[in-house]
Length: 99
Image: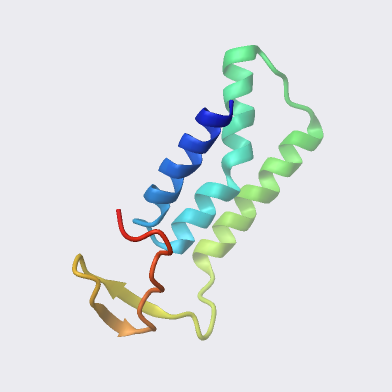
């Protein structure tokens, strides 16, 4: 379990370094929904009212986070060489180096 968990988190951190923070947070926020659906499909788990309410709240929060533009939110793009285009600060260096 330790090796598989560590490997999954390592691959996840590499993948999330390549996507915008908003997308990464939405993916991580919806992870319990994916786990519940996988449990329903593979193990025959059933959903109760509280499960549907919780999933609705999670999905609603993700939709709001996607639709609402927060004032002062930095808009910029980083090209493949690491150059910053737009109004933001350059990314912080990854403590373990690039992958």
